[in-house]
View 1 (tube, rainbow, N blue to C red):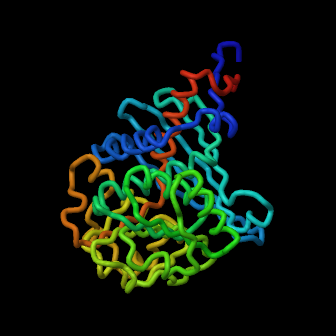
View 2 (cartoon, one colour; view 1 turned 45 degrees about the vertical axis):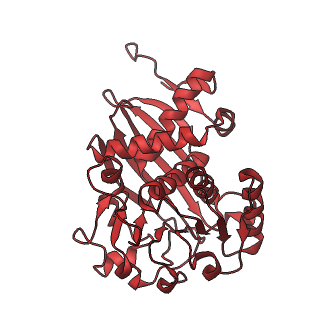
Amino acid sequence: MADDKPVWIDFLAGPDIAELAMTDGEILDAIEQQLAAQGRGETVIGERTHLMPKAGVPGHFNVLRGWIGAGMHRAGVKVVSDFVDNYKHGMPSEYGTLILMDEKLGFPTAIVDATHLTDMRTGAMTAIGAKYLARKDAKVLGHIGARGSSYWNVRLMAALFDFDEIRVHSRRRDSYVPFAEQLSRDLGRPVRAVDSWQAAIEGADIVVEASRLTKPEPLLKTAWIKEGALVMPYGTMSALELDLTDIMAKLVVDDWGQVGAGPLGALRAHVNAGKLTKETLHAEMGEIVAGVKPGRENGSERILYWHRGLSLSDIALGHAMLEKAKRLGVGQRLRFH
């Protein structure tokens, strides 16, 4: 129509994201701001949905929606795929696309390759969880999983904690050994590749479970969790024993509304069994970051933090990337309408 106004969007492709070279501090700051805004009630989170194609392969799509005020004033939708056998084709298991929209007029303002963004924001959610919920003197990190977000879990936690030991393991040796080697190079310190779940987890101060199981299987044993430990599971398929929640002093999630969404998730069986309920929940992570509820209160309490992934994190980090891109002249400006 003649009276249509042109709509231009900012486009950040994967190479643009790499050129931005987001620092650990920039990533952590964006997600911590998002969590604080969420805790203050300055956000809206749409229920996540799953699309499971009948394509004969283990994979699905997640659709995440949200809005953030708090100086960002952006609405957004992210679609992220999760296909666990992509490694057989030399491809990452997850691809993401983030679309941001004007909050008042509804037109699109940006499209961002959210593949590495997803890994970064997931790692930041893990690291900030550790900042508020782990012992300040945590010295041993035990990590299950070697996917893209696993790298950022370890890297960003290593930026916050002075670990004496970092142990990593996953289901494939040809994955976790190179993973440990890469982390050792990038962090400038030894990272141990260990040959079992028990060797990675038992006695660790911080435990992260980011496995890539194709079906639920209780591989993480409750008996391995030491007093005072923080456990952060976020595998799509549960790897936890049902009694894990019984030993926890606090149960924390990223968003209560996401807990009941869909058939998947690390604590799906615990929700179904009535072990994780509104009554047993201590807090959402945003409430802790905003100071509405306490995080860790003593050195002996075991704490479990389940983050499923929030649209808000994608929007917040996407916003930070776009703002940096404008300062550096990175990315493209495209005519959309």
